[in-house]
Image 1 (spheres, rainbow, N blue to C red):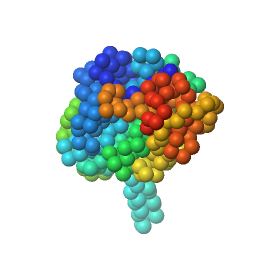
Image 2 (tube, rainbow, N blue to C red; image 1 turned 60 degrees about the horizontal axis):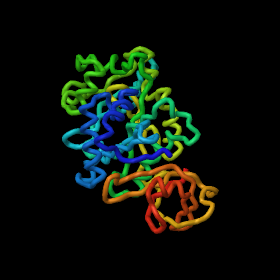
Image 3 (tube, helix red, strand yellow; image 1 turned 180 degrees about the horizontal axis):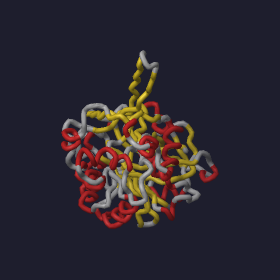
Image 4 (cartoon, helix red, strand yellow; image 1 turned 120 degrees about the vertical axis):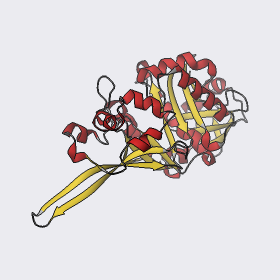
Length: 337
């Protein structure tokens, strides 16, 4: 069976292999950064950090091999490291003497020092993407299940930053048109530095609106667009309650999607239940995620399963109980798909 669980320090080699596949902001191809992420996640799941400083890193295992990841940042945006974005706005101009009217799209830098919860770091290796068990959905939904089971540990808004269309070499059209001119750095260099230092963005980027009318059509067209590899994620987010926030990432121009935490369908449908022994649990409906939490590592583990949910009781197949090491009477989390 495939198993979802928190990341362990011994996972560093497998995690690095997955991170190298996409090399994203949340999961970069950098072993030193990944080791810090693992340590932060370990302390988060074990409750050693203040709740809004926690960062949870989930890994999907095929036997003992890591084939996917996803993450939750309890709060993205603090006084020390603000959440930075471009608001995509409109500026209307009209000349009465010429009878000319224009609606310009403009970008204005913004900062959030008491930011939302952020979901990200979703990577699934190509060989597992079209698996009939919908493993990508497992990786995505486990974050909402965890938020639903620990609602007080997360903010009232959830943010998801999606990747835009990038060039074949991984560079960003938006960064080349805007960011490079104000920083003198490449996209990769600025992205790396911003992981630990955001001061240069506040001091080097202009505070005044940037008019997109001044840029080539290729740049204007890509603002707020979702890249081909994340179209499926966009569709899922919209289905469960997220909307485009008219904001983009100041580095790659990727769109920001947001939702009120308590309005997210998957958060509302996550619940705790008591395991009961029933016959024919494999024939039950619905199919979804089942999770278990303990005071020792792994503090969190989950898997996909069929189950029979009746009130506060849930009947599980024997193979699911064995995989999660639960017995009748134990408490589990459930999220129907």
